Amino acid sequence: MATTSYDVVIIGAGPAGYVAAIRCAQLGLKTACIDEWMGENGQPSLGGTCLNVGCIPSKALLDSSHYYHHMTHQAKDHGISVKEVAMDVAAMQKRKSKIVGMLTRGIDGLFKKKGVKRLIGTGRLLGDGKVKVMPKRGSGEAGQLLESRHIIIATGSHPISLAQAPVDGSTIVDSSGALAFGKVPQRLAVIGAGVIGLELGSVWNRLGAKVTVLEALDSFLPTVDQALAKEALQVLKRQGLDIQLDARLTGTKKTESGVQVVYQTANEQRQIEVDKLVVAVGRRAYTQGLGAEDVGLALDARGFIVTDGHWRTNLDGVYAIGDVIGGPMLAHKGSEEGVALAERIAGQAGHVNYDTIPWVIYTWPEIAWVGRTEQQLQKEGVGYRTGVFPFMAIGRARAMGEVVGKVKIIGDEKTDRILGVHIFGPHASELVSEAVMAMECDASTEDLARTIHAHPTLAEAMHEAALAVDHRAIHI
Image (spheres, rainbow, N blue to C red):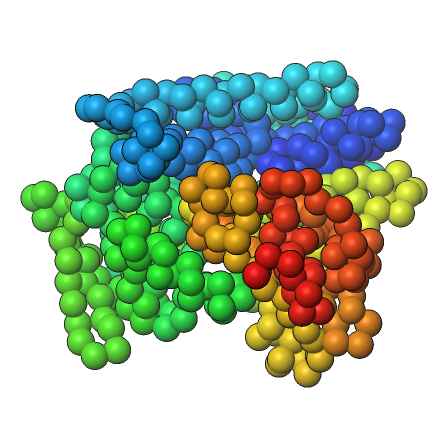
């Protein structure tokens, strides 16, 4: 079998892998990217989980369901009279698939434009800088042998399964299955009140499903600032989500009409019957077919690839980035690692500041944050000051009819350096970028307070919260 040489071989074409491939090619490195993902149409599809069954399709459905909910519940507040609003789920799903297709084909176009060699199949490590491309079973294609000075593993993650609720792809589904329902289930249960569970539950709740969310923890969104998390919980419950904490799944049983879900609370055992059950309890590293054990690639106790501060594994010339190494399982985190690693391979000084990675939960209102929470700072013994400002006092929010939520800014008690920004409100996903920029520049709350913000905008809530740190907010 002939061997083809590259400067860099990347296994996986999700947000970490495809971005790394493009940046490597930009830097003049001969680059190949191996990926096995198959799209809805059964054809190879770049972009990994994020573009195919994650970030993009979920946001498409969230936006569609938001528009529907707005027309049926809020349009009248704007003087808009709408009769006989109907949701065409098939059309909604078709739109979602069209968006996914456009973006995944776009990556293919970028690969061609930048000179990245796309290889379809599974990349298997052979050691000594060699990778075998294993073609999809039944394709009739022969395997290929590659050699490279640098091999980047970016194989991502896949949903965690539960023995009590085996996924069948029909009645009991994972997050991918919940994005593909052909009709709105009358009764839906979601196991897990994390980012994925809340977003998927919100989609189908807005469209009319009776949604029950079961969370094993006794606290809601423990990584979120708890003042905002408590407010978000009450808002989501008012929207119709039945969120039950300290509720551990103990079993499921198929019925003629759906599935019976049995769970244990602090006081009693309960059961509900639903049409569909979504298992959304997190994700784990995907290393299947990689040949990790054969070449001695080090994995930790949870199955993540072990790396150092520069994404190097224990094997010479082999690196890993993205979900497969753990940490925040966020597309933008993986992408930035891909850029930084490519630059380091090219002799530059690539770097990722993990302290300024933004997080977003795309419920409505959205929840977004960057930096540390009050709870973390209290545990660390760090002195701080806070400024909080509600959207109800923002003119633009009033005009939009979106007054729920607030902005909280945390500054160091001594230096005034911004330590964290937490937002629960409309378009929080967009507003948080200002906070990320400020923290990247080591800005103080005073810097943000002295920055002129356009009026009327939602971003004025950031300005007022910064002023509030020093007890000088204007509009409250």
